[in-house]
Length: 180
Image 1 (cartoon, rainbow, N blue to C red):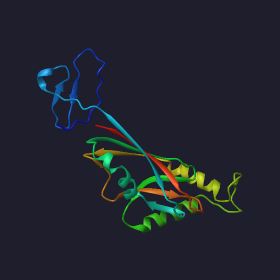
Image 2: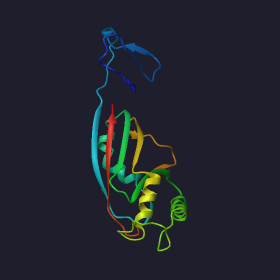
Image 3: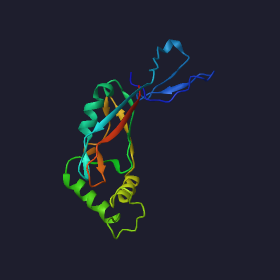
């Protein structure tokens, strides 16, 4: 039985749980043989090799690292968190590389850099502050549903690491899996 529900076991009254099968059962009705799965957690830190500036599809690298744990979840959420302020994570097109190039072009047009840019923060070079702004635009975290041991993304969706600095830097992503 696959069950994706939120329940509270602290209640003293019967609690109704709705399953994907559109039937419901009372938790304290022991004749129903309802088995409530115990939520579980898994966490892995993934080190990604340095990438040149631009958007890079990293779905296969992430899956390779978490697949064994991911197989144990029927329903849940995968949370990805990037430990950096000059790179970002996003979900987008996983097939045509032009989308990644066009996204990089867009980011470079809307966030100016170089000596004529208006930024005060340039401690690590002229690409430093633009990298922070781009990182804030896309963000450093993703949440992806898990269904039947797989990340439940659309056919053309992939996980991107967007590197916003000129010099390649290794990056760290923490992936936390939670569910049943």
